[in-house]
Length: 334
Image 1 (cartoon, one colour):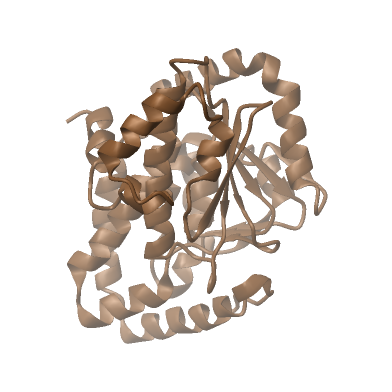
Image 2 (cartoon, helix red, strand yellow):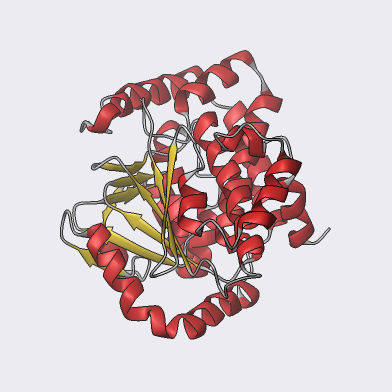
């Protein structure tokens, strides 16, 4: 099965919210699609995205630059909860549908897709450790596998830009750990504020980052460096990752949004070339869904082998992460 077909099966799967769950109108998906086709000339794309209501995401479209900004938000620990994953998956369905609908009336309706966070200190802390602990203790392998597959469904869709020609930008203004780092790595461009920290802390509780880190890092740095980053569990500064070629632009604290807007405006005239280069990169150094899925199987097996001592370390890290709730700062020390 080709990766494109794989993504299509994801798009129509149960992980994605229906159109009626994404709009305030309560219409069925068929009615929503008909409304889309009928209103292209009447309703701007920015209003269409503004009408999408998701509990853990804000979608904002800039008509001038054709940039869609996706801001992660929500209450509680800023991690990839099942709710956030569901909203991200649903947003991908909407992006795909609106792009295909509006391209009939305007070329390249979306040129840039920016993935950012509303939390001023945290991009994303990664996997839902509280859920992991519960599922592992209960021996619920199938539920743990489903969670992991939901993660790679979203990250793969982002890595291939939903098979569309837009450019993805990860705007990291706060800490990006585990799955948060993997999400940023799945983007074509990473813009980071100077105070942001990046890391893969899973080794601290005897696990490894299994939702894309190995695949993305091995295509951006050498395999030895990728393993070193995963085995160390240490935090990296934005400047360190810029030196490694993983971060494209480092800016001062509070300047991330303005710097991203400036980047888009300055490079808008070169969009055609940049988009073609990034698409070529996906062909030359392709990350396949099959590859991500194979790593997930290894991750699930390793997770189910964690000892009570490992789970206690995970619990301590979860408590530390809880101090980041509602924009607060905390420590990740075990």
